[in-house]
Image (cartoon, rainbow, N blue to C red; front, side):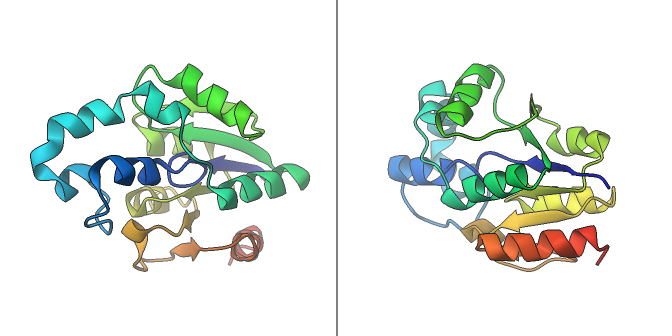
Length: 177
């Protein structure tokens, strides 16, 4: 049985959203596009998104850590795939180590869904509906960690709020349901 599971970082393990909202405000969080939330702040948002200091100090999302721990304890192969900006690999690896996230491989690639599809995992864990939709085309199930910007249900979408919901969905994926 395939035991490879792909985990995203921001929105799954790390609370980028919290840091963003502290800096810019809590308006229109149902929008995934930060520039759509604050169209007059594009330059400032771009600077924020590319600031390694921001990523170094992100808060942990406990559910993501619980998922990674469960997978590790049960013999799954945890792989990290992120689309963070270029040049943040060292900061990201340090953040993962500091928070005790154990993984087999780490990949940072703007073409995240392409990287995931090539890895042929059992499933992926992400926060973006667009990733879910793209991976459906490759028959890769995605478990979506509940966030304000994914508060709707799409085709075959598995949206979770707890470790129990994650485990239940993982079992269904293993059983082919």
